[in-house]
Amino acid sequence: MEGLIKGIDVIQAFNGDARYLSANEVAQRTGITRTAARRYLLTMVHTGLALSDGKVFWLTPKVLKLGGSYLDSARFPRAVVPFLQRLSQQVQESTSFAVLDGPEVVYLSRVIAPRQVTAGFEPGTRLPAHTSTAGRVLLATLPDEQVRSYLDSTELVAYSHMTVTDKDNFLLELQQIREQGYGIAENQYEVGMRGLSVAVRNRHGVLMGAISVSMSISASSRDAAIARCVPALQTTANTLMMWL
Image (cartoon, rainbow, N blue to C red; front, top):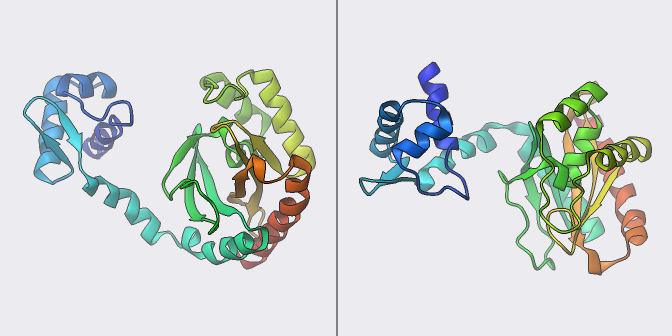
């Protein structure tokens, strides 16, 4: 089992900033020896999960099957799609369902509005939770001690010139989300984009994730977006709660 865990660590060593890695670099990133790293990498090449030119290694599209297995087997991300479709038709904007995974938010379902120009976030996309309205809403549901632990262990990196990076200000925003029952974020990950989100719970009160509406800021004013989208988001969340 430890070998499986290390193998997963080796796969996760690759990312957008490290698409090509040597055995030495993988060893440094995963905390294993160079010999062990090379053994894992060669096994990945043998199984088609990676390729190599003899010096560096890189992942193949076959790795996507690992995440695809979850999306194919998980009931809720698929079942929520019809609700997102109705919500998208109602507000004429793209909608999504996401969950919190450590310091990141993961998008599991997505419905893109026909008129939207940007590609949006596909299922499986991860974003730093502090830059996402869904991430903020989900963080706001956590007990205070978990929020403090998150802030103590996470650097609030700026992805735009307007990203909130001051932790005291971020705490104030989470408190506001708790009080108003929804989250709204603008220009946090991408300049010109706005997101609105509410938490989704099942009938037993267990948090399932968050549903969101995303749009261009130029499409409407902040107040107009709240008036148009928040009631629809809350109605959808309440419907999902009765269905779950």
